[in-house]
Image: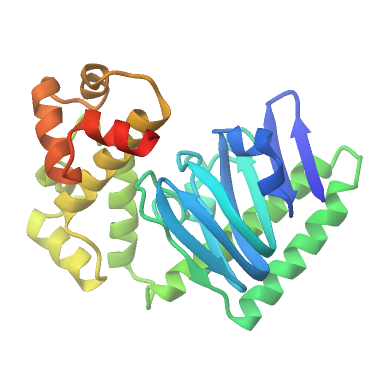
Length: 275
């Protein structure tokens, strides 16, 4: 089954489906943010060339940047998807606080094991959504947007709960991820991000360490690496073009960076994974 709504005027789209693996057009849509969770059995996925197995009661949020393939379906899973025209997580960050937490451009995949109460709330929300998808009045658009916001806030609370006590320090980490997503092509030094957060590099390092996060420079490098891999695997752009897009001084600097990170040259990496 697939429930879908599109606002032609603003090109907004929201979709709820239990058969995403059978819908190549949806899988190819690179504008959709996704929540995928398993209702029964297990599902094997390839996310940015990372092998991920989701079992019953597990949920994963994916940004529009993640490349997703279904490798194996042994059970039933749902996917709730929307594009930025239907609901902009950047412009409405003050409402849902999910940017940099649930959705970011790194290839790191965040998965949650849902508690019984969390699963019940998600089931309730999706049932109400299914009913609303069948409505045809002028309030349908806004009602679906409200339900989507509730779903995002629920998942944000789950993510914050898994991190322990919600605090100003954790909010700093979330903002740091947002800044890296925004400026990784132009800014590659920890000091630049620390300045934007009004923190010293040492304070930022201590906050990241307290929440068992990678170091600041590793987070920056991971974001650059993720973008480089996507451009190598899913576009025909040359290493020289990619170096320019990612803000490197020249192709040689990009080549050194990529080989240090991946253990392969950009050409070898593209050849190996495409093969």
